[in-house]
Image (cartoon, rainbow, N blue to C red; front, side, top):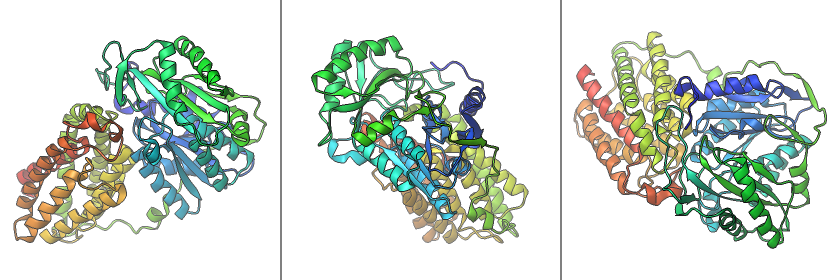
Length: 578
């Protein structure tokens, strides 16, 4: 298990500080992650890898000449926030644009996409690319739904090498697309991993069994089978990948035999002896194979095999020199400028142009106070339920939901209390709380809660208490913001399955002339019932989708946490007479 930490809630921040101190010749710490210690001597596309921490040497370990220009680092197994991504991009940009590269996970797609749009609006061309190499996570006819695992290492390497050669942003994206289309990965797990501060692993594998088709965020395999010999396991992995050989592919392949964190190098070399023999029998020739830990999952016991079918262009880029803390190849030409000092990261254009926050007047002061009361109640219940929410999330996900919700509500409450001290109007207060939640929590839930809070607050007046119709309009705006950002619909087994019935009931009851307090409490009860009913659904979105069958019988953690918060807030505001 993960034993060395100070405060589990600051594990990632502590890790980044230590990593940057150990590798000062390669990287420097910036808000949200790390960038190269030296700026390029001339403008080049900044390739930024990113995702949750817990995967070293991915993603920050490959920052350096010939490889990535920076890494955006989220909480353990949690996508970074859009604010973190933007911060690192501003520091890494040298005038030729930015490419965010990450695995195909909903939170990463959402947050990096938001950051790229914001950067482009601010005059920094930015694009995103999501790797989809895991053949176990979706069928071959639906590759866009596949998640990214260890094969991202090869995709990041070739795209970074193209950027180092001076390719344009569009050309670097093309190389990433080309590599991804020729890359396939299949992995197995022997035992689960343990989050810092937790006493139990996210999942267990029965003695003598293995999980086939694991994820790299502590997700178990999609199926189980008997633990095989190295020869038998090699055959399973190689045959699985060869069954998806790209059309027209040649015989030369980049190969990664990747350890997930607790499988020792000696074991990997035993397995490699079997793998290389099977590849030769299939007429494939490995080109500079990599055997070792490249994309880990904390202390997970397991391994994965990646094949990338090369052509002349991809082979040149795969073999190109690189110099980073965790990966070195050849001699990198001196093409860097002087050591880079920290930049003053500018405020986003929209924030910089915004007028001072309006002040609450009249009975709107009571509304602002009620919002703070609500967030304090949410803060209390989410910290009480952190472990339970994490266990619920670990059934078919990565077990980070409880910790992410706590980080989000901590930041939101602090921002709301600061805004309340400044006598900010309710809309400004909830907007600040939502922005803080999204920035600190990261992940899908962080972005959705942030958008929902800001949208709800937008309907509240500055100078008086809101009418029931205005509260209903705010609830409807929150639902539209969440569904518009995340794309989920009722039945997808997400927080929308609790939010939609809550909003429907609240709008209905306030429109019928009922009091807002009674309508809120009744709607919160409907949300709880709906959240419990998600146990019978199969997830159609998010990290739980590849493990859909395992999820049946367990309610969705996002819907559960939302319903819990809504009912707690209803009780708190009722007690306070708000």
